[in-house]
Length: 236
Image 1: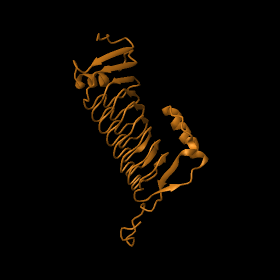
Image 2 (image 1 turned 90 degrees about the horizontal axis):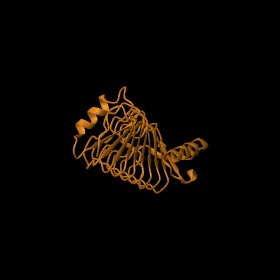
Image 3 (image 1 turned 135 degrees about the vertical axis):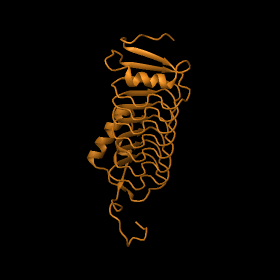
Image 4 (image 1 turned 45 degrees about the vertical axis):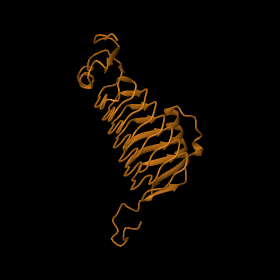
């Protein structure tokens, strides 16, 4: 693979020959003022922290499987992964987008403040845990304890959801098309409104999925945990 000099619009990295440190060093310090608008990363080989901490409006394509924390803390960049990813993809993302063409392991989009995370396959446990404004769209199923303590944003699931969905949820909203094994503490199903259908349609359109918004259920907070009740005896 031939590397193109800074100043062209596309730059390539091959992680069989270059380190993730080299890649991230360039993403953090080499893009400012350059004409590069696209980065292609070959042979990721499940390495961790690929394209973490990017703060630049650039398109990044990862041609294979990524490890932990891929695109963590992303800001402005649009990242596409042509494979699967490990723990914490797009963790604490602030803006931009991350699309995973395969499957995601635990804690996808954890603590994300903004932007959009799209996972075309399934996501494992704790998807969207403590999300703070990010929108997450999952084409398949999600695992147990997803959206635990989710504070803001939207989690849209086109498949099924595992146990304890939305446990201790705050103001985030969850939409599920399939079955829900169980709801967590203070989470409840609510009637869909016109605004919900519009939001679901918007998220599906962004992800490129063609499901009918009227097939989705809404899960949100019952707001019983907002204030401590000493007489509740741990029953809510």
